[in-house]
Length: 336
Image 1 (cartoon, helix red, strand yellow):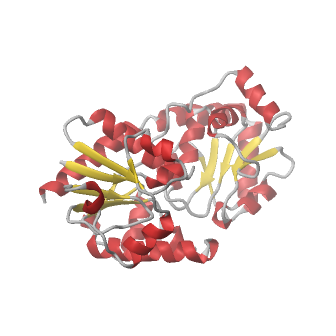
Image 2 (cartoon, rainbow, N blue to C red):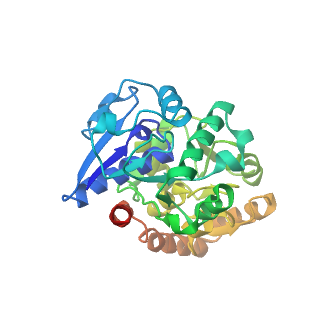
Image 3 (tube, rainbow, N blue to C red):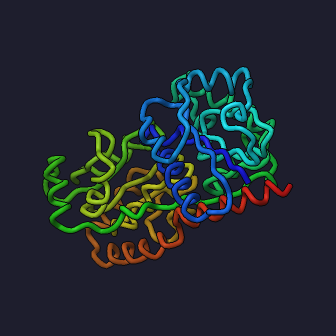
């Protein structure tokens, strides 16, 4: 097969970037039989795209949206030549004669449109219109996302395949020296809890109320370099990740792999990812979140139990496994 993949997303430093980069790295590692034609439409980090041997086209995402999502002109074959499979990004949906596959990470843009800039909402609505009309197979990153796809896009269940994300090899318990160095870098004193900033669905206001009396460090309020994340997870008393909505929830696995106990929500995709290895709480109940924090911080045995279960749970997820399952989808769709 000749497989075309849009790599544009890898330059943005998001969860979708992590997914795209790790999926493609592992596809190239495990599959020496098929030809991969990679491209990106961003000039923002030309070098990062070219590292994969990707073609870089000199047009910004706004042009890709207009030409491919709005006008739906200029087949991707005009740029890549003939292909059998095309795996689109979550930003642009070009026309193609190839079998069409896309990954949907979440449908927050439809569930919570008020939390996005209007332009972002319109871009995704245009793209999803073509996904709904033309796609041969959708990869959903969780059963929760699959349920949303069926409910919000009316895409038949037979056209949806759930493939869980993985977690990078960089995430592992760090030495005390590394932890102290990173704490000093970000001026963190003493014991601390971790949380993530973001849109309202990240639930940070309730998390801050639940964490009163504790030293809470919020990733995203100051900028955090990716290489410092393992040390922050390793040094934290726990990760408080009680989002109202997640397509997958990668930080849950990242924390577990670093030996950091996790409190997360009992809704959306998060119970799928956490399994029995985290404290699951009602994200709307500040008192329940607070009780969970105190249970971990004040009970050493509970903390040890969650860390042990976390190490076991995270073994169920890997980028190589995700790549093998994705390759299987390519093969199945190609034969249709």
